[in-house]
Length: 277
Ligand code: 8IG
Image (tube, rainbow, N blue to C red; front, top):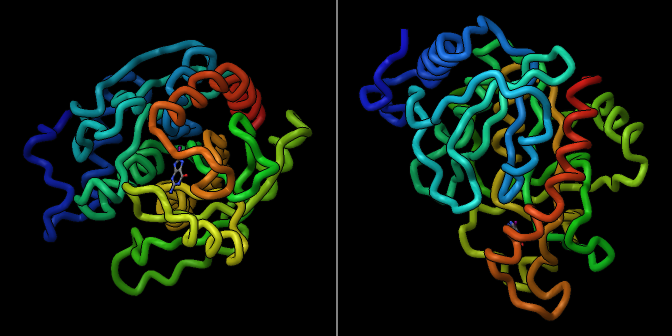
């Protein structure tokens, strides 16, 4: 049942990424003893602590034991998939993600999303830590993603796959999140490749293009989720002001800390959303 992850090279050109996603989903079904899951969550920088209050932990699988997954490169990203029961909903929680800046191409970046779809999920909650382009969104601000601008110059889709991205971040799910926490703001997420943070000039550009927050994930995953037929909710946790928005320099340690501090509140919001999704 469980394919050897070492023999499943997701990035080989003759490999169909959906075959690998199906193999990973089969391994998850095997390890969790659940044929299907209902909803998936991807947790961003420092947000792994939000896992703990989501619900009843049913099973835990190291990503390294699943076909197509590789250990996360970022401190603060837990390389584990958890099957959590939240109000009777079988939730697959990915405690880490692959990033485009890791240099292995786009397939690993969206592998969790495709695995979630292959595991039966109908909706996915994509979370991230991000930099605010607005001075009035301080660290700790949770923002719903209304739309995105993909500045990575790439796509997770291969071939003539002309997918419509209208209402990509489902209004139904944003309304649901707002009904739980009316204080949630909403904005446009701009994805850069990274791993460097932006220059102040790039930050001004992103703001002028209509962005509210910047990050290095999520947009490519949301595109893959749409292709896979998943309903998408995106939630960004502001962990810093983007470069030049205020005068302090950016440090990963601060970013990580902001995520950890906000994790309990963020976790409660997630748990409520998952209960009613
Ligand atoms: I957390 O300021 C986090 N991720 N591109 N810029 C970009 N990504 C980020 C930032 C940021 N903060």
